[in-house]
Length: 249
Length: 263
Image: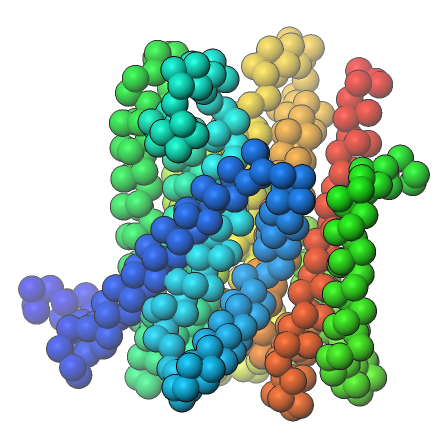
């Protein structure tokens, strides 16, 4: 192994990327775990907003619909970086005011929680649109049949709408998950220590920019490829009840 | 114009608009906007630079996307495979990382070569904006290349066959039949991609390119005013995004009209 690395002239690179302290590999992996935590939390939070948003847009009152329309339009036309800053400042301000009102001092928010809050609200706007489209794609008869059986709206949602829309929603949700993993990199600009910021710190303290940025790129790419594969499997599974039209997917 | 205003004339919307105007006036009166005159020139310069970066990277990115898409849709494997790999890698990694790789990585590599430092290009390579443009162009080319692949593949086979039957050369077939139809298919998604590109432009502020986002950050650092510059920034981006939407709607209408008019 070492002979092979030496032959390729990669001994130095391997030392830089090694997992134990003189190398920075451990930092990168810790950053990756944090990135994935934030992305997972934000994706789940966004899905929750998305379900309520989609229901509100489809079945809500006129005012609810318009307000949700404003929410999705604004979020989708303002850069994530700007939204992250605004939501971050608003979030810390609100929290500090709340804790001051309760008689506590200033609170320090953990980077992971703040990242989930900020990216979750951004994801929510996109998830609203994805889920709205998926609910609209369910054949109407299925929902009518559910209502005819006397299902309550909640039972209808749990037993019919959500299982039936999953197949239509999965491609869009897969894209959203990929966007979430990549958007965590933006948190580096606000100073959260996730993969991109850890990478930059490692790179600037060792001056080995190419090594570390390429290594981080490989990690992100791995996440993307694995996620694409998983979502493809999930979609196949969700579509297993449908009639097969040809072999193409 | 009046027809466009009609959907706004519903009672609940009038109330919402009134509330919106109220909030706007409240913000204008109670928040601090006295810094605007001091930074006016800088703000306009920033907007101009944002637009300039956006237009250049979209135009060059689209020109690159055509061969990338075509290679994947109809090229031999030795062209299709690298084009597909390019799209996967660029779309699978964060743009911020790509920008930093180019700027910090190449930027620290170039000065090591004396012949680069003595070349004509060196004054440009020392600045940040060429790296910004290159990174954004590559990113747009990858996302749009994927769309162009689908667009090229979706052109009806019969059309290509009849063009061949008319004895069109391969170049003419591409220029007259394949490319125009692919672009027409891709046009509706092009607007959305361009807005995504607009939303990616503030990332270049992290490598010291002074566009509108960087101007807002500077105002925040100079004056310690937090929300006002960010709100102005959000409004500016929304206005640009709205303009892009209108522009592409106009283009689409013209394109569709032409296709149904003359054959």
